Figure 1 (cartoon, rainbow, N blue to C red):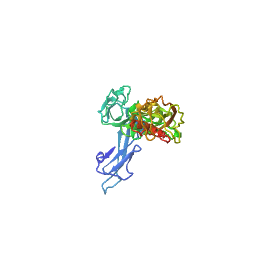
Figure 2 (tube, rainbow, N blue to C red):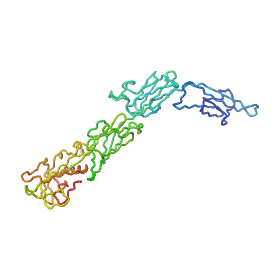
Figure 3 (cartoon, rainbow, N blue to C red):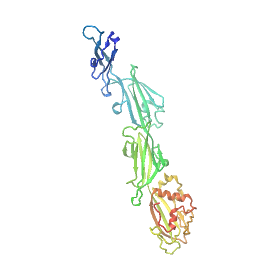
Figure 4 (tube, helix red, strand yellow):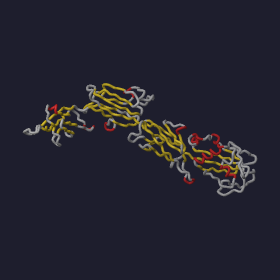
Amino acid sequence: MNVSKGNLNTSYDFDSTNGVTSGGPTGIDISVSSGGATGVVTYALDSIPTSNFTISMNGKLIPPSGGDGSQPTWSASGNAKAPFYIKSNQNNGAKEITVPAGTSVTYTAYEGDSSKTSNWTVTPIGWSSQSKTNASSITFNRSFWGNIATWFTSDQSVTTPVPGSYYISARPTDDASKSDTGVMTVVGVQQLSTTYGNVTVSSTVETPGENESVVIDAPNSSLGIAHGTLTFTATPEPGTVWPNNYPIWKVNGTQVQTGGTTYEFSSSGKIVGKYTVIAESGNKAAIDVYVASCYITVTVDEPIRGSGAAMDAFSETNATYSIGHATVQVTVNPAASLEFFPFSELDVSKIKGSVGLNPNSRGNVIMNGFSDGKIENPDTATPDTTKTYRISIAGALSAFGVVLDDLTQPPRYYLATYLHYDAPIPYLM
């Protein structure tokens, strides 16, 4: 409420001495200058008056110098209507809210504690405005607004608006001079990502495919193979802020974490297999993680059939003899892991069988190419020793990579080279 000299029909100045002017209701904030007085009453959302109320002020005037008698006083009062405002059905009625995608949000207009028929306008950032007239409330779903292309996906089963910021304003239908505003920010998962080595694997889909999958080691402490660890990052849309307790993190459908931009997945304590990591904020983005064990199997044959030569090419001690034909096979469990990163970076199709090698001299190794798991000279060589080693993913990639690099240019396939030389097998690569 404002009171001026003109309102009082006087030329006397207002007395602005602290404490001279007072008023009501309780909590009124009064400021006074020589030319007038202003009183402001502010209410919290949960204490807004439910009916019309009165504002009053009183104080003193300063007469011209030399006058006689007591200092003249002034008073003023006014009737105030119950305020107009809007509330959401989220966060105790807050007008500015951040919610996960999929949340059903309703805004209601009030005058005092009674709902008020109003005209509404909603303006999403980047899209055209939409209006509703003669409604005391609006609800953000497909049935209330209809199929607004920019607000809703083509999937009719999704009934709430897509991620974005929606600016809301309302005016009473019987008094356009009043208004109130709010902002609803709908936050979804823009993408989920993780980094393996120097490569980032990202996903915007709920059902991961080849490009949304990654393979990590199952641990084996006795062989020095550490558990694989991946840090996942969920990116919100829009902005950079998540709603409280979002995103929800799940692994194979089981919730593992509430809130937090990142989640760390470890293969420690897990059996080999597929694990789907999901970040959810109404919508979902997922990446498949394959926890895998890799093995290399080496079969060494006698140099001459029936010779009975004592050959242990797998021992930790030096051998003093040459070896016969050898087959080498690298396998991964689960086998499906070979289709995904980092194995997908290599053409491993040829090495799903065995690679045959024929060392023929102590100074070099001649690699005769693929044997498809067969003994190349069945009449002159029989299997002597077979042994399987657990290796890391890095070791498997090394084995695959060297063989694929060039089968005809020794000694690039180092495992076979060491088999032929008098040295232990570097089976942990």
